[in-house]
Length: 261
Image 1 (cartoon, rainbow, N blue to C red):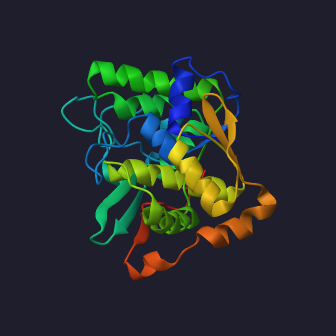
Image 2 (image 1 turned 60 degrees about the horizontal axis):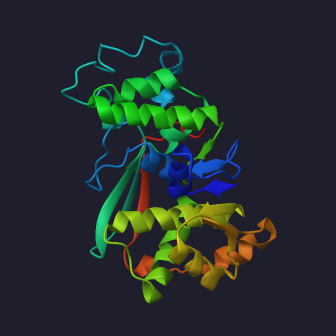
């Protein structure tokens, strides 16, 4: 079962009592929820390094990820630089701004292995209040055994097709990245034949129109069920290749040999 960012946020505030333990989120939801995504679409508020790029033993032992060339306790700069995490560059030619998602695989690994010391080191330069909020949210995910799944290339390609279809009859949100995040979440659920819990009425209606799924109402949220036996058909329906002619593309960087969780 997949949860979107709104559901996780509601649960964190105690306003959602549905099943959550051992559920899953994709890395985009984690990056939204943990405030990784910055105001600029090509930057992040902080960078979570992938353990394979700094030495796995450093990530596992409290107190070692300080000072030196890897990290700094100074609040004047990022403790970890961009090159220590993976990046996913999504380009929409001149139609929308380029988006770079940092830590797609790194955040999934850090949540999976519960690398609290590493994550704490990545945010220790932030002002006290946002740092406190981010760490509380990270702890919330770990305590509930939430699984984090990285976005794959096929998910982005499916989302490109969804975007082309969505723009035909629906309006994008004021901040394009918010709409794009929603479509990536939907694409990941479709590709894996998963159940998606969401509060987004418009996204649910869109999914119903193009995939033939009927949103199940569970106040105050909606449930979209994509049966695994229908995966191939649903992906065929949503895999519009029109984006290829528009110059839309995705590239991955700094994955390394051990990037996948």
